[in-house]
Amino acid sequence: MKFWILLLAVAVSTEEMPRQNSCVDRYPGIPGNPGHNGLPGRDGRDGTKGEKGDTGDPGHPGKSGRDGINGNKGESGADGRVEEKGNKGDKGERGWPGKFGPKGIPGPVGDKGQQGELGPQGRKGIKGDLGPIGPKGQKGEIGIQGEIGLRGPIGPKGYVGPKGEIGGERGWKGTQGEKGNLGSTPVIARSAFSVGLTAKFPPLNVPIKFDKVLYNSFDHYSSETGVFTCQIPGVYYFTYHITVFSRNMRVALVKNEHRMLHTADMYQGAEDQASGGIVLELQKGDRIWLQSYGGETFNGLFADPDDDTVFSGFLLFSTSEAAASVASSI
Image (cartoon, rainbow, N blue to C red; front, side):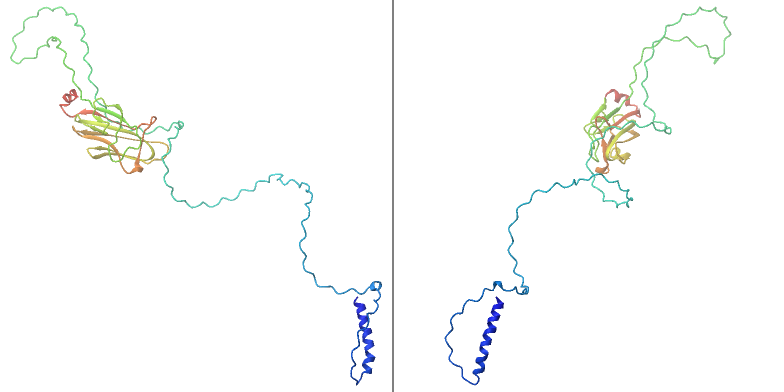
């Protein structure tokens, strides 16, 4: 199409060239009327193909096409599970010890553990010191006198000797007299008690109330106050056996507000045992008791159906001549 337009422009320019030459130095005439339309030109489709034109500018991006139809499901892939476990790696080197952490808060008292198995017999210990003298036993009753034997025959009468001087030699021993009446049995002064604990961790700095009475026939110990009161002046022996559990323990045997004996145990785990004993001379009205001291962390006295904490005391001998009359009035 461009080719034909170019040819038409060349033809028009050729026709105007003579006109320009003839109108030199003359005035232009009046424009003529437009000519008639020419005949249609020859169809240019059968012409020779022109050269390829220059590449045009890129067009604007087109709109997105519609979504395609879903494809068919693909075949199953290979099994992705691990086939075999790998070999164990070498043990790493031991790291440096960590810093000590802060001290934890003491936990609550745990339940009592089960009794452990009996351990092997230990080595024979060193012989202990001689213990205190035990109380004097009661005097036994006098036995029945045996039968009197047969009297022997009287010997012949001897010759009368010469009169002796005053203050002469001692004569022969006379025959045994008749048996006298049975006398009254002497009354021996007595005082003893043995009591146990039923509640664990008793109050501090006050007499411990041992409310499990094992022996207290003379009522010299009071379970309500936890105090033994001397009724018979004399020398006494006091002893105690303590089961320690869960915490440390400090206990003192007190006489009239004065601590006479101290016992302590630093709790190591499981169950500990502690004991003490002392000999004291008491006067009538003196008071004896046990008490814990040292704060809540030193109050580990413990007792349950399988473990005992006991306190005992008894009179060794009286120091008063009136002890017999006191004992007979009890």
